[in-house]
Length: 420
Image 1: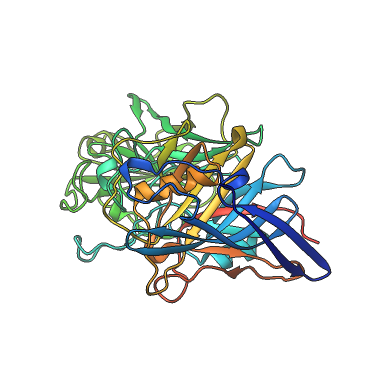
Image 2: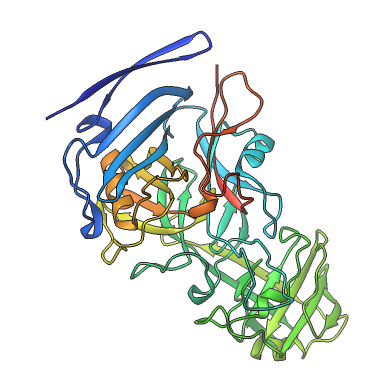
């Protein structure tokens, strides 16, 4: 049975009248992912008011009945095929920095946005070590690579579903189509004695025995955290065998025993090594030539223009096996439909009494709104969806963050489009 809901919404002089199909059309029926227990009947998903927010961008509220109660949230539908519509990375100007989503959207001129990747939020296991605020996965802004992925065991957030990794991203290519991809770092440090693999770019956690590069995009945050933990245990002690080398204009300028802090000048690269990586860096001498190269390589052709980390929960029209169907939480997610031409961005409300969703239920919801692929983003107190009303200079928060206010985050997905 198809349920039609006719709603009206006024934005200035524009009066939008839309029919929202709860069990057909945009909100087509579908099963619930991963063995989730929410029924697939037409009445589990309901929409509230709906209206165009900008050219090619639609905003609506929704509620979804689950066994624990009702999960309420907010949904943006972005038509990437529409001229002038695009998505890009919202970030605080440095990898090791955080800012509210509304502030980032306002500063970058986005009409809407959601929070992005999980991040290094705390360092309670390493007393005296500064939390960097840097994100877990790769990040690309306007074709410029900002960072690579930390080891799987060093991530923050819920357990990864089987077969996924910190290198998984939501990406948009030069063809303006959204896709899921997996970005790996290919890099090297060429020295007079040979070539050493580069294992990280602007990371809060380096692989054991690895060397990482830090550029001006890292920011002023301390680099000590990069040598703490191991590839399988985030809480493991910090390494006592470290070296930091500053390379300026292709030559070694300084060598130190421990990672430092402070900004990295343009044209300068700071190399941080741990264990075997540190031993390799200690072979260098001040004045020697060093050449550092790096690039992010995906599984799909072409370098993405935009990429943000998270973990996949729907792929090729089906939920991933092994999704959690027990733990419910406030969540943010992104879905891809229409061959990459439509992007769905949603965030749940964090108000008291909101049921939240399990990862399995979230996958089922994204399938129902039309996603063939989908990615879970950071949730809980980070979940934020912002929107700028036509004629307004500021984007405002539309969901209710669970902490009572916006949490500063390292990055997000910004929507850019023309408004009346």
